[in-house]
Image (cartoon, rainbow, N blue to C red):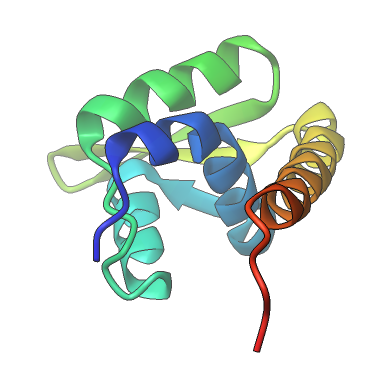
Length: 111
């Protein structure tokens, strides 16, 4: 089962911050592939969703960028800024609490 874009949209910033928190420096396509791999194809992030999110996080001061030239190709790497590191923890805690609240609200019993 692939999760709907509506579910992913609300958590995409947190997902990106978590990926960069765990992997230090990544480029866009690498983020999409890593998420796909880690979630066993349940979360697929389109470039159309990812790049506006990366640009928003950058404009919020949460990401820093670094450009590398690989032959004739330009690759833009993203890393967390100091503010981004603390915001990543905050967003992950918020999402975890939200998931716990939904679990309670929906009366989901764990086996």
